[in-house]
Amino acid sequence: MLWNPTGHYGRSGFVGMTKKNKMQQPDGKRKTPQIQHSNQNKDKPEQQIIVIDGSTIGNFASGRAKGLVVPGFQVPLEDLEADAVDHEGYCDTSIPAVLDSIISFLFSEPPAPKYTKQIVRDMYDMTYEALDRLRHIVHRYEIDCEWVESGSVEASIHSIEEEQGENENAEGSDKTAFLSAEQVNEIMGIPEKNCKNLYQGGEYDPGCAGVNPLELTLGLADAAESLGVKIFEYTKAARIERNRDDNDATAATEYVPPKGRFNLVTTEGQVVRCDHVVLCTGAENISNKLSRRLAYSFVPIYTWMAATAELREECPLKDGVVDSVIAKNLTGSANSAKTSGHEADSLTKKPAPMCGDDHVSLNYWRRTPTLVQKKFKRNEDNEGRILFGSLADTYPFPKWLISWRLRYALTEVYPQLRDVKFDHVWGGKLAFPLNSMPLIGRDTDYDDNTQEDIDGMNKYSGGGVWYATGFAGHGIVPTAMAGSVLANAILGIPDYSLDEINNVSHHQRWQLFHEYFPPSPWNGSPVSRAGAGSLLLVYNLWDWLGKRGVPLPPLPKLW
Image (tube, rainbow, N blue to C red; front, side, top):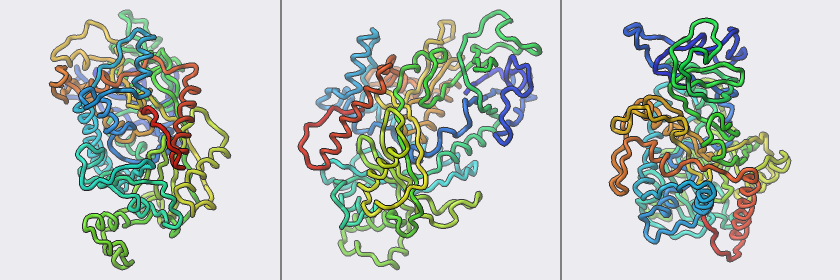
């Protein structure tokens, strides 16, 4: 994303174009509206934003990361708090902490400062605000994205204590409910006769939702275009250059606009002049000509999904079951477990929840939504498919092997579905930083010492290169949060207070991510994939043996 406070561009927003069809989308692709300039103050045109995409908008939003709209990050809050410097018995021996120490030693860079429990709680709170904001945007712009307020169930394969009531430190909304193994099986539709005690318990968060991530992405793009943002697809960025003082930085043959702080050069040689650049990348390799800080900051991890054939009434996930189970839990009535069909219909039928578990190569699944808008004539009947995702690989494997492994994982949860066919199998890469926390911040390699600093903010709003990536497959809500905090950074809006515990001044929220969870200078390349794959293999083996009752010592936390 390129942000230009001056509002000046060359033809179609780009300097150095010689043909009108440059940067244009193929027929049938997105249409780019004309930006409306303000006539009230011609000397200071309104701010302008353009987005360039190396492929198409939504190309990497295929739903391989389940479409779960849930606050938080890949790393659970309790794990982050356990690594906080003010946690009782603090001793960070997780894999990321060990790697961070080794890499800091090798590259002679100081490790990231230790955070407090309040810091990570504040970061988690930001995602709850972002979820509410995303709901508002979907409603305001009438984005038809199959948004279903279904809640989510996260089951655990590990032994857990029975907990009653609410745990104020637990990840989830205020109404999060802890579930016994029997309740988890009932909500997920795992028959008792087939149940092999895979799950030992879990929790239900009613504040989560399900969504079609591709339709959400396209809807957000439409909303942005309606506000004057210009989007250019099939446009790959090659490098970022600081603007020079002379007038021959571009090959423009017509109008040369005032300079921005940066020139972003595409692979086709076009130049975009702007004051701010926001790198919102996926799991593809990032050239060090764009950002040396991001070039080796994460490892690509492949994950996969399958859509079963239509199950209809045989689908194990049912509407209204959550209401029945939670009602039983609140009343403590054993008799309410046997609710008749008529009584079940009288309940408020909350849609079947999104489901997941805590395997290292976690499983996640949902039923295809049935209560959606009919604008595009989709899902007019209840197909009852299961969208099931799993696996974590560092290399792509043949489709037949992926299908076999997905079927094995599905059958482990639902033995009754062992003969169900997969109609579709798909997947792709996710960007996993070494600590599995999102990378949000500012590339200080592009900073200089000439920017004015007032209250620690104006030097940032004057221009710079920013980044938001590495969401580790947990990106729908955190990406919305990242967009908000970086917009505040660019506009110079203070949105955070002082960190009194650490005696550090943080005027803006992005600084928390930038300081406490910075990009790693090295991901282990050229053996990063092999190394990460070996670690995953060991941890998956530990999961497999643990489910079979083999007593094993605990491994260090993977994140």
